[in-house]
Length: 62
Length: 479
Image 1 (cartoon, rainbow over the protein chains, first blue to last red):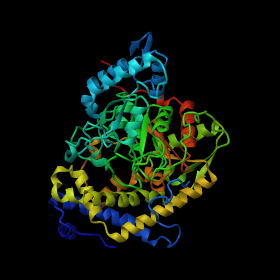
Image 2 (cartoon, rainbow over the protein chains, first blue to last red; image 1 turned 45 degrees about the vertical axis):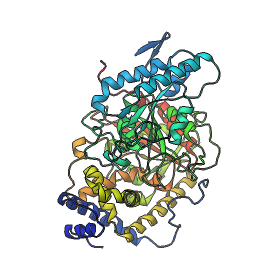
Image 3 (cartoon, rainbow over the protein chains, first blue to last red; image 1 turned 135 degrees about the horizontal axis):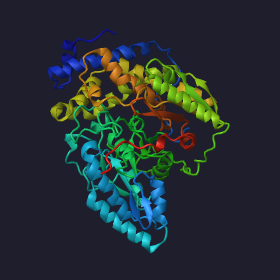
Image 4 (cartoon, one colour; image 1 turned 60 degrees about the vertical axis):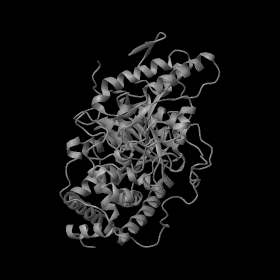
C-alpha cells in the first residue's frame, strides 16, 4: 500500500463530509501514513490461526 | 499533617489505612474531607487534577458518614474515605464532561455503576478528575486546564486518566478511579509514580462510563499502594445487569490475596518490551532489577517472547480509534472546532483508515492474544516496563507532528507497552520500580491470566513491599 498525499486525504475527508483545516490535513496525512507503514506488514502474517474476535465471546471465559 | 482524635492524619496514608482509622474512631470523615480540600485549594491551581470539586456535597456526605460511624454498626470498607473519579464516569447531578467542551454542560441523572458501588461502600466523592479529551489521549490544549506531573510540573502526566494519576500521586484524594482502554490507568500511574490496575476486561461494569471502545474500556483504580488498588477493585468488581458483558463469577477477596508470598511462582519477563531498542536503558535496568527482587523472594524468573508485542500500539490505535471515530462522526461533522485539535486530528485520521488495514489489525489482535496466552500457559505472570520511558515534557508531548516517523514514534511506540494486555483482555498492574536520573518515576508492569487479578496484585504487592519506591513523595509546596 503506497503513501497517501495531502490532496488525496483532503479528497477522502470531503467525500465523508468531514471538515478539515489545512493544518489538520497535513498532520492527518502523517498520521494515516504512519498507520499504513505500521499495519501494512501485518497483512503478511500467516492466515488462519485464532478467530479475530474483538473480545472473548463468553465474558466468563478464562 | 493533621491531628485527629490524637492520631496524626497524613494525606499520603492509603485509603485502606484511613478507612481503618475511621472504623476505629480515630479519624473523622469531616476532617479527612477538609484535609484533602485544603490540599486541592493549595496545589490544584498548578496541578489541574480536578475538573469539578464537589466541595459542599463531600462535606455533607462526610457529616453523614461521621454520624453513621458514631452510631456504631457495620460500616462499608471505604467508609468516610474521600475518593475522586475520572470525569468519564457519570455522576448524578454533577457535570460529566469527558474532558471536552462538547459535554461541558452534561449533567447525568444517575451514577455510573462503579461510582454507585464506591459510594455504597462508604466512600465520599471529592470530585471529577481531568482527562485527555474523550479519553483518547493526545490532547494539545486541555479545555479544563493542563494537568501537570507532581514530580516535575513541566512534564506530562500520562493519559488518558491524567487527573487520576496526579491526584493519587499528590495526595489530592485518598484513592482515585480511572479508565483504561489501552493504558489509560497504567500510563499515568507509571509517569506519576503510583500503583494503577487495569482489571480483567469483563470484571468491572462499564455502565455509565462514556465509551471509547466497547471491547477495551475497563475501569480501574489508582492509588499510592497496591493494597489500595485491591481494596477498590474488590468494591467495583462483579456482575452488573446493566452491563451484560460483565462476568458472573464471584469476586475474590483481593486484599486477602496480598500475602507477600511469591515463592515458586513462574514469572516471565517479556524480552521484546524490556530489551527492545525503544526502551530507555534506565527503564530496562529498573525492570531487570525488579525481576531480581522477585527472584530474591523465591519466584522463578526467566524471559519469554511475545514477538508481535511491538506491533500492538499500531493495531490498538487502528481498532480503538476507528471505533471512536464512528461514535464521534456526527460531532466531527457538526462541531469539529469544539474538539481540541489533537483529538480532532486523531479522529479524522481514524475515519479515513482503509478497511483492509483495520482487518489486519484485528488479525494481529487475535495473534497477540494467542502469543500472550502461550506465554501465560507456562508462567503465572509476565513482566514488562509499563512505559518505555519516564514522563516526557509537556512541550515535547504536544509539539506539532511534521513527519510520518514522528507520528509513529509519538503514537505507536509508547502504546506497544500497555496495549498487548488490553488487546488480550488481561489484567495488568503498574507499580513504581525506580526513578530516572532526573528524578522522574519508572514503572514495572505485571500482566496475568484472565480473572487472575489476585495473582497480579499479589506479585505487585510483594515487589512493592520489598522495595521503598512507593514511599517517596513528590516535591510539592508544603504551605
